[in-house]
Image (cartoon, rainbow, N blue to C red; front, side, top):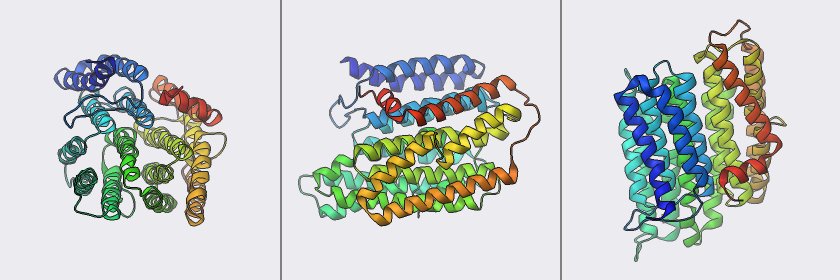
Length: 415
């Protein structure tokens, strides 16, 4: 097996072993997680992009966009186990399993492998939640979306496709929009994010959603083969713009930090999908930064309560996260919106207007929440964890905003 193949195998094996160890030995999660993060990070750092290995329907490859998504997934694992979880053993197993799902979805070049991983996730969502099981709606979307995507991609590569090129493209796009929970299919995803426990929400916005967006990017080659680039990209971007506006309007009605985080994640997803739909490098760069905003700022809003975060450190991290979420300069949120807005203008003026409207609504919603709730000024119960997370959020939000090109070049491994 080639070195690239061994690296890809390591990306799957390391989280599998870490998940199993956390499950069997819960007290070892605090030690296993840093070791696993370092091992996975090293494998990811040296792995070249767009180098396909495998065969027999099990082809694997890693795109630059997918590499960024997996870095975000590792960030989520660290947050869940080391910062947000009172039960590191139980959630450590779930976190590493979520990362393994992200790896499989990102590197899979087989529609059947993508469907198998997504259907398994749809089944596992239900037992994670007691009571009314808010995961049911999202599970149905995942199952239906995976089926449509598999059918569409399978038809596209068939020797004698039974559907026209336009119909096949429509099936693939509809399937991915269901998978991602894009508007108007975001109800199940939103309810799951609102009602699930904080560590699970962190994994959704850092691992699952970015991985599914990366799978959409990897599947855009099908649109090229079908000669439907322009119409397919515009359709994807239109779903994204609608999702952005829906999430921004939802933030205006948010009653607390959790509501702002959930509807904000929906808006960030919409921004990313608009960037992906542009089908150019600037749009993909903007989409990557939009996912970074989702993985960076939205979890911090949830951690304000989860970590008893307060005082000066909360103002530092909370301020950086809020500025990035609202897209204010010089944070990474501003760079993401600038790139995506430029890409949207190349697609359609109405699309660009929808992006502007969504961004403006987000600024008002963030300012309203800050003035209404503020950030508590009592001393935190766990100051060292608060300081570490706050410093990381502030530095990454500002550093990525000041030098987005350098960050993308490094993370994607393109130069």
